[in-house]
Length: 113
Length: 112
Image 1 (cartoon, rainbow over the protein chains, first blue to last red):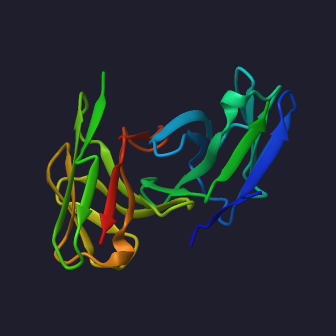
Image 2: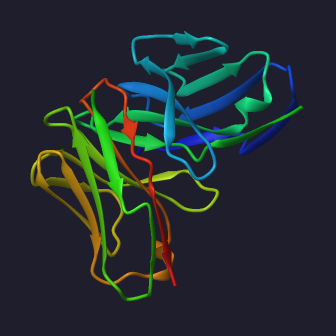
């Protein structure tokens, strides 16, 4: 059974710092991995999608890496800003029909001005 | 463009009452559809997903059920709500394997 874990559960850093969020999954047979952002009481916004054949994806100050064989992904945020404060979730697409999408429990990020 | 609608946005229901949350997707055909639940301060738990009309996969045994009466309609139901059913319910859709997933705005359910 696929399990997705995110560490740390919460993180608080001062503005301007670079930071790394971690995501691990138990079954390496995934189709893709996706990072999302969730603001309090809101739905999810997709940040980056990495296909299983890819090693990384970049969008602005965000860079996501994928090491499928070791079951790990990282989300790197450069030059953090208070507006980056949110919960970040990773999700893997898995299953025989590639239709099942399993989420981690998230990392609650707080950027201090 | 594709859009997803989910309602109601907020719901307060007594224990033992029925539940119906509805989700519709516009602008696409044969989407994969999903229902997730998020308890306070927790991640998203996959409840049900569907790859086609009448095809429902259940991930967590509980007193909830899902139905897909039309291609772009996904309904989450319960005959008798429990206090533990309280949470934030999110509907989502995906074009298919290898693609991203898009979420609705969510429905807050409080069982009292």
